[in-house]
Length: 307
Image (cartoon, rainbow, N blue to C red):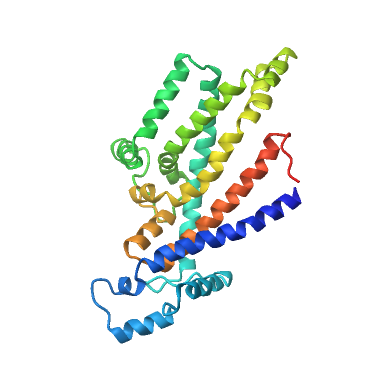
């Protein structure tokens, strides 16, 4: 296992370099950060040249990238156009989005897997049909429609929750945004769990467990569910980074100043240091989440061994 982890960590290095260089190229080569800094006003050529030199933008792109990566390894992600260090923006944004993501993942796991198991064990019956129709509706409705609808019903009309999240973003105020963020992924988790359960319920090891006289609950939880969770864990692992980076719509609806909000502001204002810095951290989150998923395979299925 240790050798496998080391090998995977080494494999992450070229993936990280390739991903971050592509992001850096798209942001800096396809746009002009200095022009964006001045907005609609044309900068003075001398002033623009000085700023480019100070920001290392007068060098070839590969040298800019090496300079930027050197700064990252020193803990410096650059400075936003408002003069605030990007690390300060990260320190305020990532904890909020992390809490929101954990709430969404919780609902995905608990509700999604539960509905998937119930539907898979009753394949072809009315419960199964109802779950499939419900998940199809959830997948078909855009997130911004669901978000505004639930915000109006629970926050404005009925007053059960705050329609917007306060700046400190306490956990109790993130429940409704977490549900909105998780809904589409929850529907996919339900469908994946349902399909996997339906396929494995007639497997030999399940019939053997039933023939031994084991209680139905133990057969489902210890045998059927454990072997059926691998595709679900794969999806959830990749979904962690997607939820953190794709929370722009949800955070805009509920006025949450997290990663999605900062990315939206950075893209809107062409704030290159902010965009590159935040996306670089999200790349690391994706890589670590996928490593964790691979390690969980061996826990769920004893037949999987890593050398």
